[in-house]
Image 1 (cartoon, protein in one colour):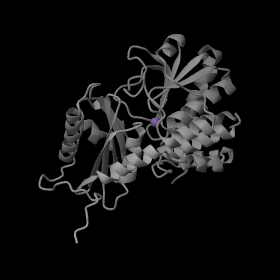
Image 2 (cartoon, rainbow, N blue to C red):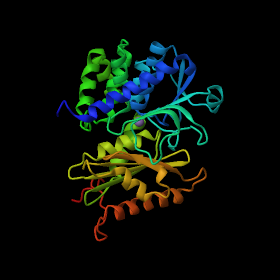
Image 3 (cartoon, rainbow, N blue to C red):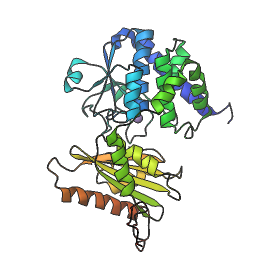
Image 4 (cartoon, protein in one colour):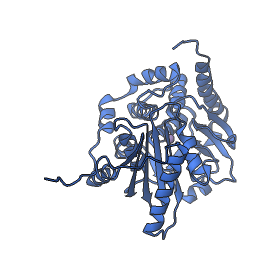
Length: 358
Ligand SMILES: [Mn+2]
């Protein structure tokens, strides 16, 4: 990787743009509501946490971090607990109480957050592609930064504000999870930023977050996912049924993709009145988000990156078992067609236990 990479300049320009905006507005932004996406992942949590710290320490801006849905993954819950992250469940009143809102790791127009469509955000810091320019006073969107945490880490490093271990560890974990342990880091400055964070990072805590103890429910869901997994050519599909939290869907999809010979793994899970689904691909050019957008009714119901994508839509509060089944089967069918998997191949169950015949 060349140090003269022109993209490197872009990343630091973004961090600088953020600091300039904060410097210019200072206390005028206080109090500020920080809203991240529903079912927040480590990158959403870490970048919101680091942003709250940066604006308080550097610019005397008071904040409240809120998210919709729940924090599902055991790792993410462990992260919030062990790093004492001040994050709160979103409440509709928050939007009335705060006149200024910063959206982190999401955008006003995205379906994955509780921000109303008719309101302008004060600030957007994100890494996801969007069809329209975010409606915000200041928006910082870097599609190539690998993780929103990278933008926040660069702003903190650039501002010379000291980085406490809780912040450094959170940002490092945010970067690792969103870049698949830096595998998806497309630019030299992402690795550099990660390395610059390491002195501020507690590696024991990081290891602890990455290897939490898991509930019995986690194992029963994983067991069902494996048992019911069906394979057709290079595609593995598993419908998990009712799940304890929707994050299990993406986590298990990721794990199932590691089955030898698979190029795609697709899982669904039922949670409240919605079906959640997740696609993982081995090919870095798979455009997983586009594949999912093509198999749902409204492209807004799915999103993601090249190898990682997910989404959800409403099936209905009173959805009968047969309705759920139909939805699951129809998604599988559309996916097969979209991936051009030949109609002659049928699914088989590689992990179903068959009784031994003597
Ligand atoms: Mn995220």
